[in-house]
Structure formats: structure tokens, C-alpha cells
Image (cartoon, rainbow, N blue to C red; front, side, top):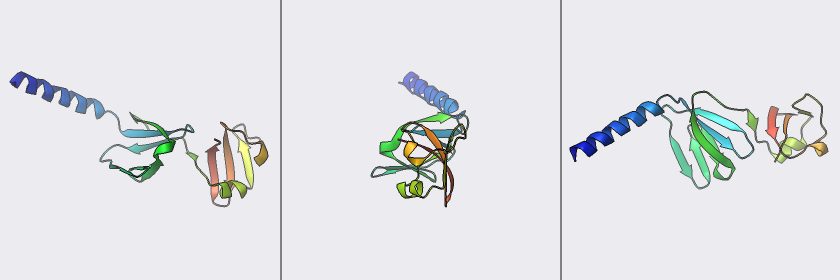
Length: 124
């Protein structure tokens, strides 16, 4: 019995030391966007279909995976409303070419300038 308890204590100590190397918990969405939050003293809660990690909230249906990482992997890709997209004054692809709204394609990333600011979005 003492050997088993000693072995368990050793395994838990090793696991804690291994996890300490990772300073961020990264969330990847189904559209490829990534958001990293600092893992130190992180509080995670789930309410209905929303997961909240620190100050960030995620819809569980849009969450692809989450994992620990050593660096901030936030991509900056955002979700904007259909109204914001309709009010967009300029839209560019990642090569810097101006794009018309009706020519935007699913699976591509665009830079959209709106009244509220400039956003990087991924079309679904």
C-alpha cells in the first residue's frame, strides 16, 4: 500500500512539473481562429453552451480544440455581425487586393474595415 501511494505521489509531482512549462491555454475555433489565455490562476466555467476562460468567452459549438502552449498563439481572427459586414467600407484579401462583398468566398480570410474598426475575419 505504501509503495502504491509513493508511486501515485511521484506521478502527480511529475505531472505538475510537466504542466508548469506551459504558460498559455489556447482555444482553436472551427474557423481556424486561435485565442490564447494565460494559464496561471485561470478560472474556467461552462454555462449552457458558453465556455468562459478568464475574460474570454467561447461558444461550445464553435470550439474545435483547446491545448496548453508555451507562447501566445492568438490569430486575431474575429467574428463580426452580418450588419457590420454590410456596413463595411472596404474589404481586402490577404494579398492586399480590394474585394467586393459578393465575391467573398467560404474558407478564406479577409480584412474588413467597418465603422467600429478594422477586423480580420474568416468566412464560413
